[in-house]
Amino acid sequence: MGLRGTGVTARTLAAIGCGMALSLSAWTQGNPDFAGTVTGVIDGDTIKVQLSSGPITVRLAHIDAPESYQPGGGSATRALHSRLLTQDVSLQVIEQEGEERALAVVLLEGENINAWMVKQGHAWAYRGFTQDANYCAWEDAARSLRRGLWSDPDWIAPWDWRMARKDPLFFATDHSNASTASCMRELREAPALDD
Image (cartoon, helix red, strand yellow):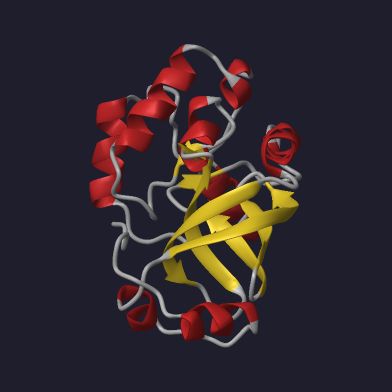
């Protein structure tokens, strides 16, 4: 669900840069589009952006890239780094995630970078955090073409990887027969997952 086209005030933008916590209602009352320059890439789904009002950490919405220490994590981080570092981007903010952090769709010259990461096989459609079925179709296409992380037969969803590290008795979901339809079913059925 996007909040595009709803108009943000200069005060709200300044509050983000200063690290003041904003409620989701503050976002919904304003335009969630912000312009900035990417100053750092933390991992395959998290970047640092310098807005005119100050720095902010941005978690890419709808996707989950392998963790840095997980197989595929390094290549996902490198792909995002080579694509975005020092680039001017537009952020379609979906929600504020505490102080100095936002969940957003990142656009580079109009291209949806979140979608690009999935299409290139560097990220999954994030089952607990998106309702956009396009991400399922893009993931399925990348898997079929064996792009990025899908070129390795031994992969595990990042959310399962994190859970398994917390609980040694946790069994990861078998996604070996995943398809657009099964992904969409998981989107409808999945409870919200921890980031």
